[in-house]
Each structure stands twice: as structure tokens, then as C-alpha cells.
Image (cartoon, rainbow, N blue to C red; front, side, top):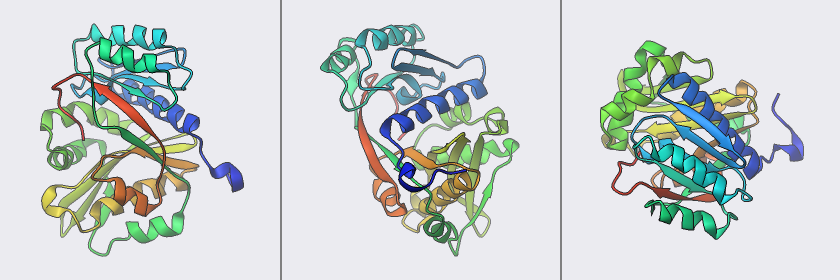
Length: 268
């Protein structure tokens, strides 16, 4: 059951822990090429997909030790793939010094956004009059891949390596497609586990934007998570999606500083 009353307010620590747990679930679903590790208050996820924020270190708590984060970065560096460190507010300046010393460069900051159950509002947005939304079967992963790659302007191969039939067969994952007159126009990926649902890869190709499709598929993913018992939904927003998510009811808990391998492709 979802929490009620004052307990509905998810904390930054809770949401960060959910983010790290979802990374572990994703790595397990991807198989042998992926891995996770935790050292103190630093968490490492490696997917093997050559996008910095899909490989690297997240500071779980502001009290993280730079030495712990540094040891996990050393594991990451031995893989020779683009990677990152995502630093929460309140972490010591030595984390920034660590990132710079490893040759990483500062990228756009990333808002960590959260929503508590708001079924009426979400239901209204999800019931877009022109859009039909459904959950993809595992053997339809290519539908999400095609829309996601076009929406993010990324190579199809990157999405193929990340959202596989094996990943969609995992019970925690759901990929959604929204269609208009049978044409796929938007997609999203959700991971529902325990008390939360994480929402990822919300993508609408440029020619279909500005019609509320991305908001509708995001609302559907969050609503399904709440109906399954989640107490909060979270996501990391790109600049393009920030206003859309705010209008849906997401609020910014905190903003993470992101340092990445220079010159690497971006997922957002």
C-alpha cells in the first residue's frame, strides 16, 4: 500500500536509494556484461552501453567519502567505456576535485524529480483523446528502441543494447508505446519495485512533439506504478522535459552535478 498523510513526502535519500536499487535491477536484467557495486555511500553501475550516465558512480549520501568514490571510479576506468560521476548537493568539494583529476568534465546538472500519488490528475492526462497507450511485450522491444533513438537523436544500437527483450521480460519493467491512428509517436520505460516507480527514456520524435503525447505516456507509467502500490514516482529530467514534468506534478527534490567522459554521446 502507498504511504499516507505526512509520510507521503519522499526524501532525497529515499529517492536516491531507489535510483541505486533500480540500477542493480537493470544490471541483473542485462546479464553478464553489466555489474553494480557499493562501497560506503558510493554506488557503481556498469551497463556496458557507451553513454556516460549509464556507467559510473552515484553518491548515495552527502557524507560519501571521496576515497570510496575513487575506488569505484578505478573499477569503471578499467572497462574503458564512457562513464560519469553524479554528485548530490552537500557532498564535499573533494568529490569535484576527484572528478576533475580523473579527466572528467562537468556536464549539465540533472534535476531529481519526484511525484506522490495523484491519480485524478494523472488519469486525466493519460487519457489523451488522440492517443492509444499500451504496454509492449518483450518481443516488441524494437518498438521502444526505434522511438527512443529517434526522440533522443541517438544511434539505434545504443538503445538496442539497453532495452532488450530480456530486460522487458523482467517483472519490474514495463515499456509503453503511444500510437495515433496506429503510428507509434511516443514511448517510455518504467521500473516498478517496492515502494517506487522510476520512469526513464520518455521520448517523442520531433515531428510529434507539442501535442501532449510525452506527458500522457509519462502519466500512464506513473499511474500504473501507483496502482501497483508505489508510494512515489521519480525521474531525472532533461531541460526539454522539465516543464512538462512540473505540470504533471513532479517536483525537484535536488539537482545533481554530473561529470562525464569528455566527448562521449549523451542519452539526453
